[in-house]
Image (cartoon, rainbow, N blue to C red; front, side, top):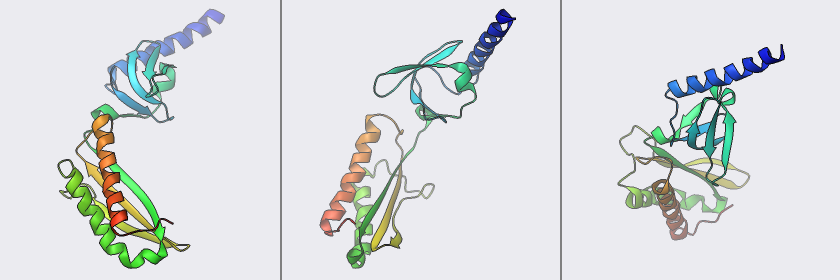
Amino acid sequence: LVVSLASQGLASQVLNGLMLSASDRMYEGDVVKFGNGLNGRVEKMGWMETILRGTDEITVSVPNTDLASQTVSNLSRVKRCQVQQSLEFAYKDLDKLEAFLQDIKTNIQESCGQFLIQDGSRPFHASWTGMEGGKLTVEIDSHFWIKPIGDNYYANRQDVLRAIHKAVNKHSMTFA
């Protein structure tokens, strides 16, 4: 009985490992993010377990039975990324808001234009989205032809933040 129960778990792990390998969901070397929050680069896919390496270089061995039922986002296969930013400013800056928002868009276009998606297939906006408690809420949403992983993504994200900073300084906006 004990051997039967133990082999049942083993068989389940092996079958889940084969299903993961055959499913085309991920391959060794892919950067993935699972529904339970686990993420990293797939170092090895075995019959019983998958080894992930996080950005902190720590490897995690995960039983395939745990991964088989998880949703997975394979970031290595994504061709576009999104940079969103939400900001809050003092109500006294309301009169400067329209020109400020236009300058944010112009600055992003100038600093990230070669990758910025502006064909209407993805949103690109800097918008005033709320006014509550004496604060003005602004949302910036931009999409780029860059994978959401790696140095290019982070360099582009910094360029977007610099573009916003430039507009904040130009209009002397006060954060709330």
